[in-house]
Amino acid sequence: MAAKKEDKKALVTEITTGLKLRMEDDEYTVYEKARVVGSRALQLSQGAKPLIDLSQEDLAKISYNPIEIAKLEFDAGVVPLTVKRSLPHERENIAPKN
Image (cartoon, rainbow, N blue to C red; front, side, top):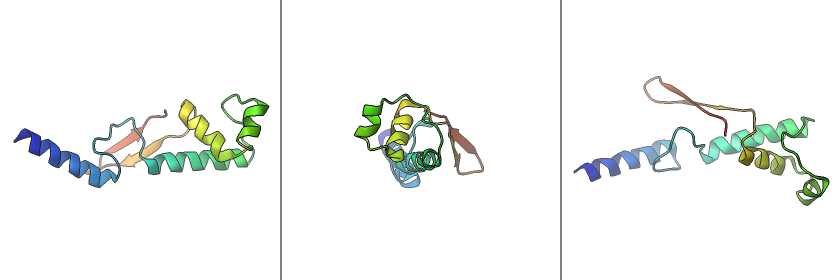
């Protein structure tokens, strides 16, 4: 019986998050990641300095694309943005930076 309850809980979690069966508090959904990367790419395109060191070769390889730079920053965990999640029952969860 416990397995069925666990499966039902996982299904509800999948439906409410739309992405993952068991989402931990420190993981981002693809929508959150897209929003963070997009926001950081906008900052970079408007003249913000990259937070990771990239050589001229690396920049040329990614064609100076701010979205690719923002993805690299996100993967390195240095993007200075957080995600505030509204959870049911008036609780809030702020996902930590990577």
